[in-house]
Structures are given as structure tokens and as C-alpha cells.
Image (cartoon, rainbow, N blue to C red):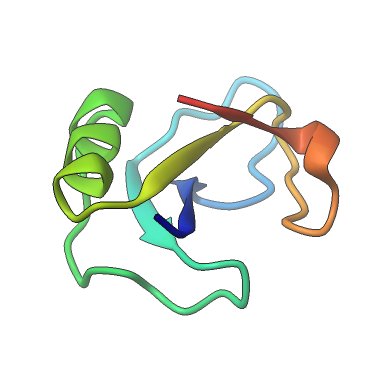
Length: 73
């Protein structure tokens, strides 16, 4: 079961800015699906339905190379 990252969009948003939607990405940045998910829960459910292990952000500005920025959903 490969890891996928549930990325909030826009990436690197300023403090107080709202998340518009979430996307599913592999570690290399390629999208898993072409859909956008309105909530974090929808994105996690979709990732699990596809057989992936979803990782969600712990920090506002994320880096996929830093494991401290992510936790398992």
C-alpha cells in the first residue's frame, strides 16, 4: 500500500488563509487522481478506497522530504 500525501491547496498559504481544496499526490508530486476534494475527510476516504496510506500535513508549509511534516491519517 503506497503512501500518498493529502496536500492542501493553495500550497504555502499565508497565516489565516483558508484551504480551498485538497489533492492527493505521490512523493514525486504527481497527482494520484485528477479530482479535488472539498474536505480533508473526503480526500482521506478516497485515498483509502484506492488502496493507499494517506498522510496529512502537520504544518502549514510542507515538504514531502521531511517526515516530521506528515502524520498518518
